[in-house]
Image (cartoon, rainbow, N blue to C red; front, side, top):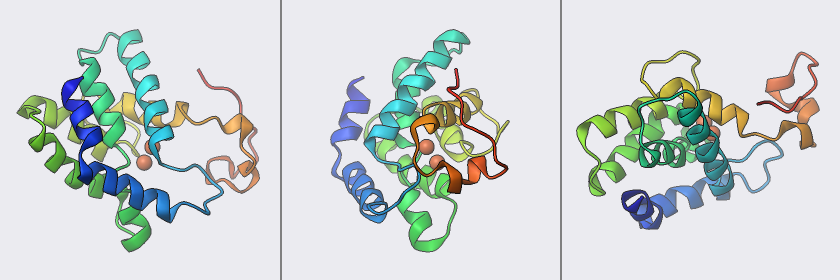
Length: 158
Ligand SMILES: [Fe+2]
Ligand SMILES: [Fe+2]
């Protein structure tokens, strides 16, 4: 996981996370900082193993750690954070030695992580891991959350 660790130490990665944290400091709904990225990475890799996807641990973890990198851009400009995040992430993947195939898998997963059934061999698992990683059952803002806007109650998801 050397390349992922290099990304996590990269000042450009840290700066993007810092910008999102800053914009979410008063947010009552789910945040998109390192805790979420770590949770999503662990769930994503569980799905990779359970579903026998031919994806390395480092590819899965890297996609998850980068999937919300563009979140602050959406707060600032309204632009879709999946698209913005893919653009920001490409620079990090190039700088830290990910090859063309790895880059394609990771960037498709980032671009498609908000859309059920988007293309890419890791993309649907990324979409599901993103949701499964949220502990909605303990959330104090559930009554105002878009995800539960039709009066559903949260359940632990597996
Ligand atoms: Fe997202
Ligand atoms: Fe996310």
